[in-house]
Length: 217
Image 1 (cartoon, rainbow, N blue to C red):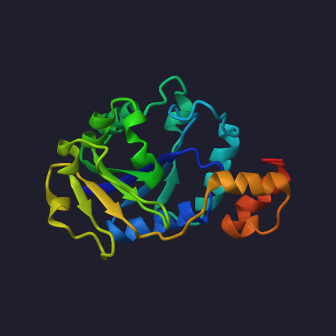
Image 2: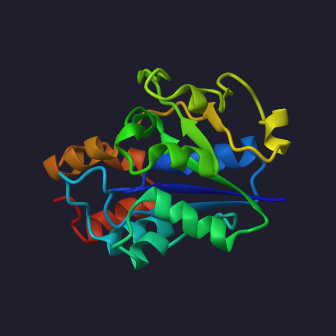
């Protein structure tokens, strides 16, 4: 069965941490394809208007252009009136019938999962991969017993040959495969303030794009 992972988020901007997640998880879970899904607007972040979807999509395309196994989807940009992850996963399951679907979230999203629409359904529809980050404590007491039973802790382990990858049941895999602490919000602040060094945290083509179009200024 084909394995495809989907990584949703604002990617405002896409940075080296996002790219490294694509590379490391593709190897760790022996994935056939890695797909970024930029959100038109994250519904659980109503207080912040994101950068233009066009710019965020373009930056993702530039960051991934040299990796044939990585693509960027417009599916959430094409239907901005349906922004919820539960809707996105429903569409994916309907179109990818013979595929093991994985969905990635960061540690912060995991800790805020109760704010997501139909969060428990989201966590049982497909496999999930939660990517931890240095200095950010991750817990499990906020979710139900039913959800905790699905958790597989892969921190400190190599390729994910866990027997549960061969079952039909979906699981939630916790991994520390990418120990790189980069914050998109801090990057935006650094660029806006004209601070030096921010280019070290984004792909070179993305840095050029940000400068050309004066994004975040």
